[in-house]
Image 1 (tube, rainbow, N blue to C red):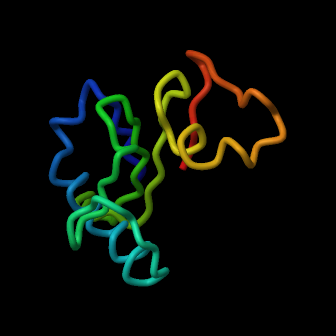
Image 2 (cartoon, rainbow, N blue to C red; image 1 turned 90 degrees about the horizontal axis):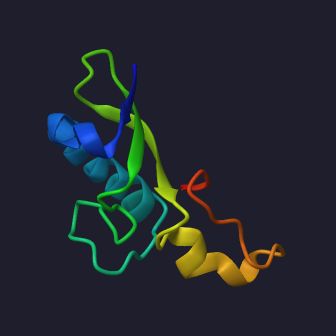
Length: 104
C-alpha cells in the first residue's frame, strides 16, 4: 500500500514516519556506508526532512512497516539539489518554482 503523507496530515502518520527514518538509516548508513552529518544513530532524519516535505511511503500489508520511501521538497526552499549538487547542474540556474519539487 502506498501512503502519501503531506504536511497537513503528518501527525496521523508519526509511527510510520519513525519506522521510515529507521529503515532509511539501515539502508543508507548501515548498508551503503553513507556518512550523513547531524543524524542520530539508527534514525536517518536530515536537514532536508522539513515541515514542507511530502513523503511517499510503501508499506507492508499491515500498513505499519515502511518497505520503500521517497520524498518531495519544494524548490522554493533549501533542498538537496540547491544545497549539495547545484554545481553539477548544466541548467543554470537550476529549475525552481512553486510547482517544482526536488525528488530524493
